[in-house]
Length: 101
Image (spheres, rainbow, N blue to C red):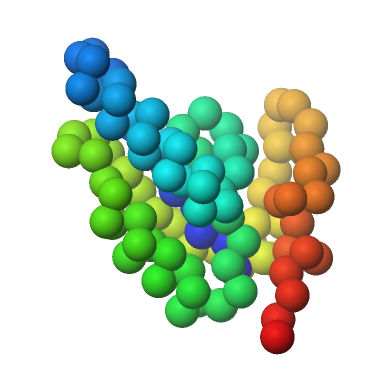
């Protein structure tokens, strides 16, 4: 499973910029990788773990803006088409690293 977080946050005031930085940093600390500006994705072992991660993200949301979550299967994620640009083969963005104990 993949959990994709897409956001559009205001950055007009110093407080809004700080909240943007904190939110982005929190996503990165939780293992999300940026695949495009304001679009972050993380590998989750199961649908339940993706739901738990989404609920965890709700604990550090900024006050304003739009934040959307989308859960995708590996097949759906791998069927993504690149219309311009090349796929980045980053080992951190690969489900092969997932170890189920």
